[in-house]
Length: 231
Image 1 (cartoon, rainbow, N blue to C red):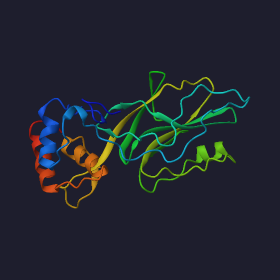
Image 2: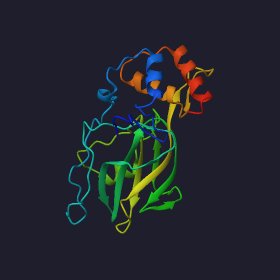
Image 3: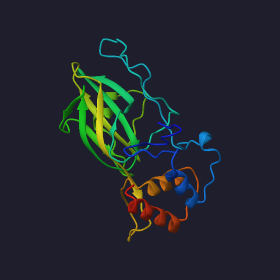
């Protein structure tokens, strides 16, 4: 999801070619060097792997690309339509159970499902997880995997959706989401809440990458972004 002009997947692009990112980086005291070579490195990766060659009940291989351990977990900021990664697949009882990875968490909400390009209401048979620290383990996936050597966990801090699909349903699935909740040093009491403010987005990325940001300057930058209509 990273590139020279779009460092994170976001509903509002942060363009390294204009003043906005350089301005915020300067205020945060970060000097990344030549902008052409600077790409944020997502420090969090998948720490387990799903079956790499899923099969159906007849043992036929399913033509799916499944993310593997070591693959990066994306950030989703703003309110975009997300094409998820598949992180686990299992077939059971004539249904295909697919775990779709959306983002690092915690995000605000999962609002709309699109299957095969058609908008759906949020399907009650599916399980939706926003990436909260104490979220539960998927019952659908645990039951579908059964005695598989894959020990399924709660994926704390990862926003994902476990889908129960009939054989005729499309795997072209997308989600409209309200993106990551962000820490805002201007609030009291201080807590994380949804925001698309570029200064708060940058703070999250830099903090995750091990930098320490001065929250007074982050607050000033966040105010400025709001004044110029960038938040």
